[in-house]
Image 1 (spheres, rainbow over the protein chains, first blue to last red):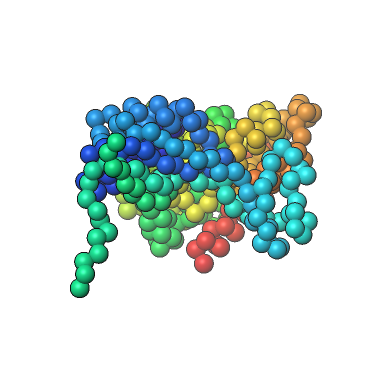
Image 2: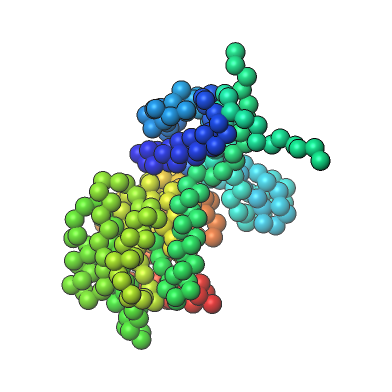
Length: 127
Length: 225
């Protein structure tokens, strides 16, 4: 239900970066969202379409990559997947310890923005 | 087909809110204020718990305590605090389901030049949205009351994952709730949050409140060290 506040941040960021690059249109926006984040993807798409109207991003397609919950073993550093409903997965596959920190699953980031138009910002000036 | 190019952004959402939260947190630390975010469902017992906790904190050396009461509307909770002699400010989010830094800064400014040793944010009654937003506190706790049931961890994972402590409230109702499986709750919460502290309390009877107050005092000392 708070997708609106999160997506408002996405739209502001995308529009700011696209306009700074002189884009005439945003084609796609890639997002990484961890599975632990309480996000409904349909809501994200609908909120984006609504909040981006009238901006260079109004027709952009969202490409959402979901990231699973993994943990890093505090004993041996091994990274493994955890299923919160299956206690057989709560043990390190490498050393059998049950002591870990959350590694992935909590992300919510804007990664790539595909734009049309604009100028290159990484021009190398010989000299 | 027009040529397109890729802008590499790689930025976390709510980075702006997080930056403001870091600034606010540092400012409170610099002035000796320990701030705690108190979250939980509507009716979990946040206000009652805070009143009991504050009484314990003030009983040992009269600590200066302030509370920011956040609700969609009304000042019901702020008035309860004032009646108990606790400095409080009401933060009405006007139907927004969570608290963000702009709101916290405004509410804090309403205290004027008053300084506190402990400043509590009683967050919106909501197990979902508040978990996503850093409110500039040094410590975050959540309440889960016995009547709500023990199976909430898998239904609301972000909340259980981001807090430092889970306070199981209304434990005086355990005899009437034989199905409440405390061990299952502790186990499930520990999967998502291995470092989580769990407290079993009843603000009404006083059970467990000394232990909670001691932990809060310890957290303040550790944070401001």
